[in-house]
Length: 312
Image (cartoon, rainbow, N blue to C red):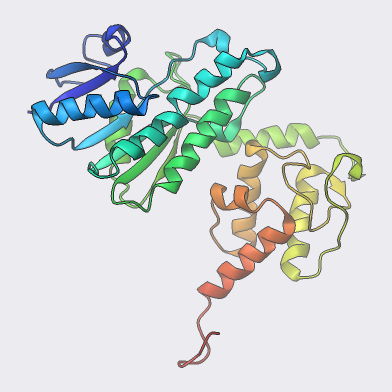
């Protein structure tokens, strides 16, 4: 029978969250609360050593630590320093410590439960979204290791119908393991693409195209040269409703965010018949970098004209 171990500082939180065994472990009944904290490498290492000593090798790890109260989701400028640190301790620091502790004894998988806030942000989600985004990036950094790392960016978990239900978490986790080569999944009941498109329509409705004000930009105007740069600028200008965007202009400095990025990526993929991801887009936020990425992808996908082509 499978054994489940829950790491908790004093056991109280874990027992409360178990909800009679239905929330965290489904039908499994063999559950042990192990004292320790994931934000401390020493504490985590001691707990892992005890489990392995008493029960043998650990087959998989689920990092679902979240100890943030609603009142701790506020503007960063109003947030005490200790609350900001709290956002980062359990989330990204936990991933870092897991990597350190399991470096020489890799389990079959390490699944990390993160948040859609890392993509969607929010006025009161500054620290929370930043911590989630950093945690996602750390997981992506570890995907080349022997351990299979997986991060699940979950939408809100609430009883209302449009949100993820507690009872669905086990199924979500089980289904995520079926995506063998996927290291990051966005999970939501909402149609995120439709909502982002609707938001963009509302923002641009009844607005005439205006000239770009460069007063608050770090880049100077440089006109597009390649065909790819020209086509991407057309998409940028259509999205933001303004003329005068140059190849060095950054999507996020122009006022872009994750919700605007989703439909833009879809348009780029359709326009150029390629497939770029959100991560690709975030790592190449200017017109120039995007055009270079697209041209490289198209070149790599093209069929060589000669059989014995030599690349230098």
